[in-house]
Image (tube, rainbow, N blue to C red):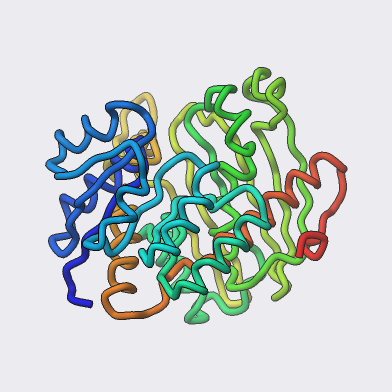
Amino acid sequence: MNNQLTVGIIGAGRIGQVHTASIMNNMKNVTIKWISDVKPGLAEEWAKASGIPSYSLNYKDILQDPAVDAVLVCSSTDTHAQISIDAAAAKKHIFCEKPIDLSIDKVKAVKEAVEKAGVKFQVGFNRRFDHNFKKVSDLIKDNTIGNLQILRITSRDPEPPNPAYVAVSGGMFLDMTIHDFDMARFLSGSEAEELYVAADCLVDPEIGKAGDVDTAIITIRFKNNALCVIDNSRKAVYGYDQRVEAFGSLGKVEAGNDSPSTATWSTSSGVFSEKPKYFFLERYMESFTEEIRQFVDAISHDTDPPVGIDDGLMPLIMGLAAKKSVKEQRLVKMSEFI
């Protein structure tokens, strides 16, 4: 395949618009020919605003176009698996936003379809491509801090979601924490063996009424004996709190929050600095660009994408185990799902 790639974007909501802008602003070797969305008028509006030549209510119009090399699946979670299966059958390479599905069996069906078709498949765990967390990973891999013993991940949103969204998202562990489960696997270089969750609804009672939690502490034991603690909250009043610390036999590495500037100022009232960036689009915009760039490179050079289907499956299993741990108030082993 030549280095010029033609893609279609399925889903013109927020994340579809993020990827559209990222590709158009940063990737001269990628052409967006199509965008689709089931909401009347949305794809047309975004296509005309962005200069995309073709739009549709039906994603299958994209799959039927022989000029399209790959699709970005940015639609609602409940459509990811079927669209991915259809795209594989149409011999299109696939970038799929997380999660692939909330069902293990459906994710396995996608894997079977992708392997049968021989197409590339990448999952949208963008935080792996963040400059801070990549450096942490590099220092762990090159043994700078020795054998990894303790991994601490803090992930707190600036404000809680609408309870109506909670009811259809799969809950905090499959919508929010799934990124942290992926980060834990990425940094530890191992698979989870067992986990335990202490959780409650401390931010918004309506989230509890929707059947979910909004605050959690998750402890994980990995197969390489590393221990991990993840703390989550749906509301950090000071901004988007995203931090990591890895502690090993030879030292530690930590990555703090990104802020608008690194300036600090001191007065008689105290010492001050800026709050963390407030929203995930501010914090992770560069990582969205980098993950698509590496997806395109995998297609162009016929290499494995950096985040494959199994990388989508294992965090799902961890999320389901977390839900089970909360429900049954016990330690849960991954072997219960595999």
